[in-house]
Image: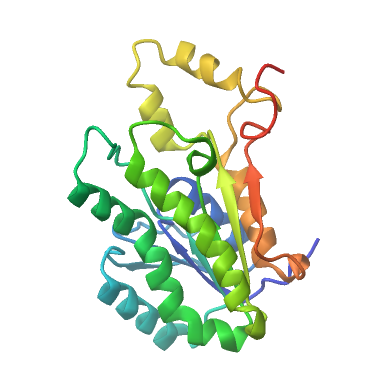
Length: 252
């Protein structure tokens, strides 16, 4: 299926690694022009020459403004934004402070607002699409990570809010919600246990579909579909790509 993404300029925050990088690669394969927005320099190889990278510290509204100005100066358009960057900083209720909580909220959800705010004039012109990457923790809870979970809950709420606010401009807004995804960071986390394979089996036995981790590419495929006009009447949705982990009976 042709997703009609040829030449579309799509910003992907946190696109240097993990889920974000899988999204970038999938967009490149569809002929889009993915723009990685990341705090780290990215060593771009030549297998997909239409991928570009800009460095920005996303916790700064001013940095987000500047990177949008740079992208639009270089490409003169923005057709989509994928808000993906974030990290579980384990700022809990007991082990944490109000100051750390506020910082965690900003670090994990502030830039979602900053990027869309500054990109909005261009998205209006292109009638573009926004995809926010969430987390199953926002609907299941996790424990000991109040800041991250609150931020991810806010992201889901903003998805619905923006879908309503941007209806007059035909800008669609959706969220993709992963659960247990086989990223390099996840593998590093597994390796911190005394018996990583035992821990992996403990987790995957609770994932109903196939009893395996979701791949980054499976997340990316859904994101790319939502960015495309093949999902032209889909907005305000939370799409769970998690093998049924969040909603199905885990005893299956």
